Image (cartoon, rainbow over all chains, first blue to last red):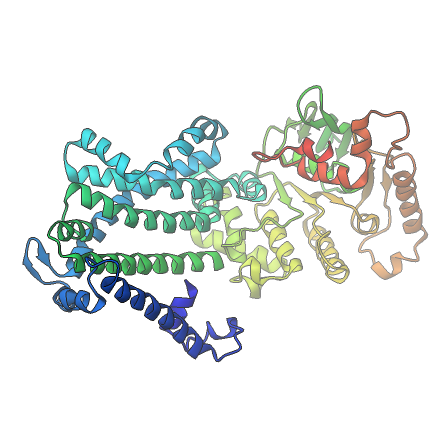
Length: 277
Length: 300
């Protein structure tokens, strides 16, 4: 992952000394990812003319996708919008579900980390609920809320919550006893203990959780949109599959990947700053 | 004069009933107001447990602790603690670490007064120029100065120091010993210093008390240090009183207060506890029990 990021900025002074490659750093880190990409596109092109006639070729994919990419925020109709606009709808839904996940997951993580009783009561349950797929949660959300939008939020929140819960709990458990003794000796009030000691001490771990949660939220959105038919990148993908425009499936996959990657980079930048502090 | 700080028959152990290791057994101590007392003992003998009891971070199994006639039930602003590991908060600057102690203790003050107070104590430990540095940017000696400033800034009646200098190199250690003596001479606060360095105890304290090796550590005969202050480190080496005090303490620690022989038909548990590395691991883990950490596991 750092490989690709340094390819984007090959002359970044911070990245240069970390590499110990025999070849000049800038040429290798550009050539290798490009070579990998070229190889995959070649395999794709080959597949489209050999064993999978339904798979659109790279060239055709580009031609059919071009209007959606070149005017990313155009709105020509409900089902015919720029890819950026669809991504934006999805991001907005993810943002809401993710906010919900963090708002619920963080306090839950603190409780789990601070209270042995709470941890012993709920840890087994969490371990069982954690691996449940979004596809399983969504119908329950529909039963509970009877509308697709709240059901989607419910599904994103409940799937994305677990890394936040577990990492927060881990961060809270790892707070050195010394810090807690300081809080007791200095007679800090509970709120002061929380904001001045517990929270800053657990923050780096919490952010690791937040980053992983965001990744899951973005993963879940596609499935949720497919099932609920909400407008967005996942909804568009499913609709284009049904309309037999297979080129757009590939366009959507690439867009989902790029957006997810950008989100992860963003979060890990924040996370690294926190860890360094 | 009634004792200012008094420990009566204080005992403390760790572990479940039936499988309990007594760390401290029957500790009696009286400290007068303004007195500087040093407690010297082996690593893992229970020194940190002792200071945690006085600080109110732990409660004793037996006996009582009294400060100014009132029983100690928990931590309080009347006792300042300097931790062995500094225990500074790494996300705060030196100043903020000290300010954290000042803030809750003087509710009637304005923010400016509190800030000036914290600043004064930073300067007292010669850290004025480093006020905006975080602990990670400070040397070990400077960190312990911040910790000392934090403990003093709350204006406690007793200063408890748990091996404050044991993690420092010899030269920094000597400098900080000088600082501690200088600061103590200013307001003659009551001090209980825990140390594993007999010379340090003699240099700083009015009275030095050896703590026997655990388990069930107790105090040996105390030694009064009547060398006039300020004590000169160089002259001290040739002072017969220094040599005598040193010998008394060391003789006790190596003799009757030394590690118990495992051969004395002891059960398997105490053999393990008497073996130095295991005993140290057990005692280091024991005073600060954590979720999921079993202090007994280290000794067993």
